[in-house]
Length: 210
Image (cartoon, rainbow, N blue to C red; front, top):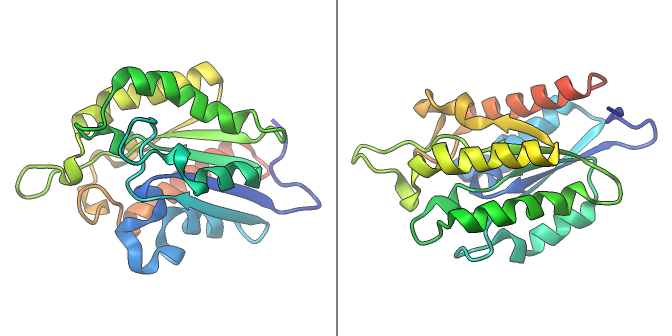
């Protein structure tokens, strides 16, 4: 594995995802408390982390708000970052979005669009965190945690294995920590901190020079 820190330029990291990446759980302070911002501080002054998260976006092209149709998707590709942190799927679990076969077919292509960039970036594919029910017993925003924990969790793992990219399991990290979430779905400051530390550990483990 090549060193991520190049002698003549800073390390660039692009975080691609939905509202969890965007920082909706810390909206008022997302420039400081969303996990991409915290990750930037952990990586230090030689790194620049870009947040390409967008609220409500789906992985699959037939979802109500497909990420691949957004300008942020094109900008993330054009950045040609050294590292890509990819996480979508939570919004795909909504009943009106969910399509197992579509996600199985389209997730590999989405990951390849970054993996096959000419600069050969390092790819970290993340399994989404657990989504917790509120006091009424329901997970908000029509999200189905039973799909996040099963089909989506497995499809992400299978894709990472097939494409030989790194896998980060945020479900295992968060499954016993409802206190890390502002509304059951979006991480609060503590949740974002724990996610950033998990990503930092994964990057550091796979690239000792960090």
